[in-house]
Length: 186
Image (cartoon, rainbow, N blue to C red; front, top):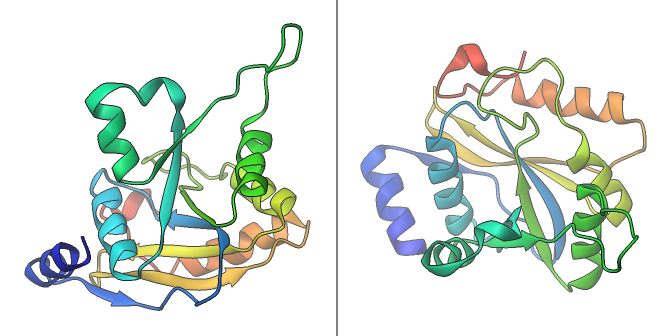
């Protein structure tokens, strides 16, 4: 996949910036700005080139048959939020994802903080609380369509001050241009 990714970056004129630090075993990676369906394509290629063992979560119901096999080969991890016993409460997405970090020796999970391809003034914060609860850093993955650059920016270590940390992340992403700039981080 790395060779194919390098070729596709070359023919489309994209470049890579940053690197995935050696020795990092567990991390939440944000991918922003998320304004197009093409974002997953370019982000996936970039993470193959950066040799990031990237995963993303998906409802377990999607992981059936040939579609499930294809999604799994691209890093999908099914999330089962159903109660373990009758009468138990349904597990929150934050708890389910934090459990994944606790169960595995290494895990890099990509999330889109906007939660949609349209502009939203407030980001979803579940990814932040997953990183905080699991005790892992958040790496800022990005796509900059204006400059045709994809990569990994700085790491954020959740302090517990969600507003301050999210603002730090947004300040970084304001320097990146999505495929549809009007939908990007403001």
